[in-house]
Image (tube, rainbow, N blue to C red; front, side):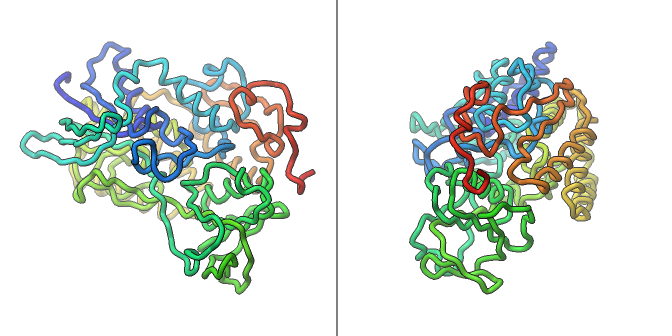
Length: 461
């Protein structure tokens, strides 16, 4: 086993899950392959790294992260909790069910800091190209060390792609938008609501990012928020000052025209139009080609590439579950690499993929999507020793979360849930979400108030 070499591209939640899976074997005294992980950014955490930069990073590379100030979890933390490292263990106290960005990043770091994972990660290093060498049955990967401005290559028996798929924006064009006089950006480059105070905003898209950025800008004092949808509205009970309209047809100056024949003037446009699965370092015959869905084609059990059994992908699904799903995938990949899981032949794998894809295609409601992904995780867990947890209860929490949002999009983050991992009941945050304008770790864990946390939006005073 020591002769095998495993390469991991990316040290976000998926890549860290892979390192953690192998570490759990080491702790049992079992042999593991040689492992190397390469991360484009200067720290781990993937999407949870916040930077003020947009466009390109320090070394001229396209920025990976889409994180912004004032982001709070948009789902209960109890639904993403690691089975082997709880929030109460990390913080030594009960906290609310919807923590802000800095708190979640601290939690991710807390588990991985207990390990020696950092020794296996080379930061500021980007994968440039991958070749599969059939003679040696290995991958040759060309990397750039951005800090040293040096190019080098490595050989791996297995390659794990854990780069995520929320970093390459999907940028549609609308007639006249190139002459819009105000700010135009993709959600990928949104860094916080501060710059949009007192402005009228048009958000194009009906994804979670449109919902969250729209509500955040409303909370922080935008003059009005319109969300323009392509097919179906998000359909929330929006507060006064927020509305949905059908898709934009074109722009004339700062005026947007919509399919329903109406038009309105705006100060800024934010494209919340999703992301592309983009793997520029992979050749065409190895590249995963999919849109955002719960079960990508070409991946057996959602992780093993049909193009090459030694090529693995983590976290490529659309996601209700996140951290603990990445864990279950990483544990499966680990046991496959360790030869504990035998793959069926290519045709049988294709049938299994087709079955899951057909099942997803038959789902229509949010509840059905949650049940689908719950079944997927349950299927993965039966192969490994990942600590079991009550998936049915997590699914119930997800469904309750969907209803909470429908009931009140502004107050659902004030709800609390109970951990299925250690039965800790969350504590209500000391300040209601709409009044809490400071998302720092210190403020979150403190009990002082900030004179009603500055002030609520005028519409809610």
